[in-house]
Length: 622
Image (cartoon, rainbow, N blue to C red; front, side, top):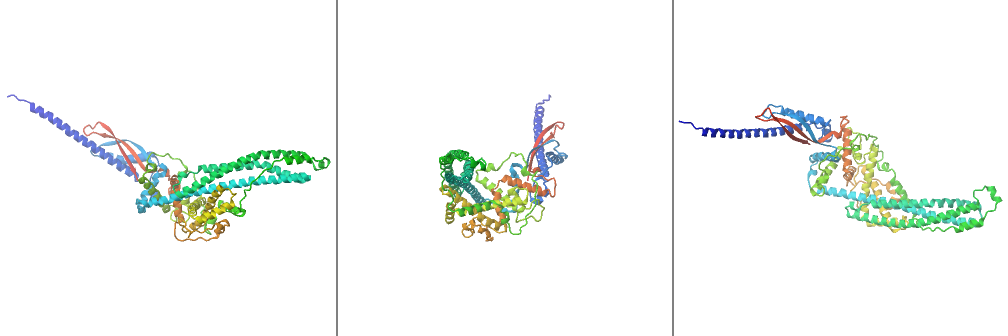
């Protein structure tokens, strides 16, 4: 009987295929398991690295940031924790070959955005209502934006009014010079007719001085016109969203343009007069030569003066016509000048409560985050969300969170930090001003609060017909009669009036009181007459108990301020104060997020002598 092997061969081939499939599945499962094990190991390792957050920073400011000495230190720490998993005896043998720090996001990157993110994450738990999306945040942001619009209007009206007043004063100086020259010429004629040598010499000297001064006065007038034109061109209506502010600023710009146009026409006339002035100067010098003004007194008795020629020179001098451009009410104009000088002076001592002792603390501004340059890392920013309602709400929410956080952890003039050591006592003021001493920061912050209050007071005045009429009447009294200039001066007087009321407001705020964001007829305190004679300063602070506090006004200003400056100044304060406990602390070495890649050599299950390279990515953040 013969044996046949067909079935044996068939089964042998079949079992080889089945075993290959089984072993392939086992190898694939082992590779997948190794990949998952490596992922778990790297995630655990990076979490261990992130656990090294700075404890002092957390204890004082409730902020989680990883402080590191160097990038090599981060890679070394990550490598040690990863090696702990790779060295375990299990089904996934592997060894680390290299660690790459592929990305690091620091506190100072992207204009301090990650500091904002950390603050916003914390404030969601500290102040839960900030996390509620809706109209509340946008309404608050809209109100502060409106204050910003009127602050822009306030600055523009005050700047335009100052420029127009300077221009009018230079114009008055020119017209006064023309009148003086004409009066002196007439006196010269009389002295020549009467042949009075001493009198003629005195008037000739005055006349010559005025003739030589005239071109310079015209040049000053022209420079004031150019300055007003440059300031007017810089004003941008497009940056204002409020209709009242935009409409008023449009009137201001149009009036300034009319003033500039009129002033340029006057310059043309003055330049034509310069030729007459030059001719008069030549004739005067010729007359002086005939008079022989340089001769000694004893020689005058020996030589006969040629008065005929002198009279001819004087009579040939051209008449210089002047126009009346003095203010109608000089007393009120002088009072407005005194008020303007007063507001330009030092107001801090007047605003502070009696007996206040200011802090003398000061710091060095060298080596701090706000004075250093940092590379902006790639990543999302606020511009990604621009144009979308969700993005606007998110941005407003984050900024409101920062504004709510700042008073909790940074001191101010009225709220000092009594539990922690701080390099500066007026920290919120430093966030606004960025000066090296507490006094300088307080002065700058108070001036900004004055301007903000002035802006909101201006909003009230613009909506009060009676008070606008008073300002118009005063403008007509102190101006030279040019209608466009009167409109600009009316706006200027309104800003001065608003600023005077703001002085009383800030005195109340610094005394610990509250002032409503928007004024009404009932709580308005300053009259225009009291403003001009400065009797409004004798009024005592009145606190109705309603409105915003000084600290809340600082928060409004920070909302309007440049967020990059605010964020970096927060880092300055954080760095200074943490260094009281940790001398080598640096905000630039605080990481919010790290990204690492590990290159690992792994082994197959059935080919133990051969290794293959794997790569795993891990990221950690707070």
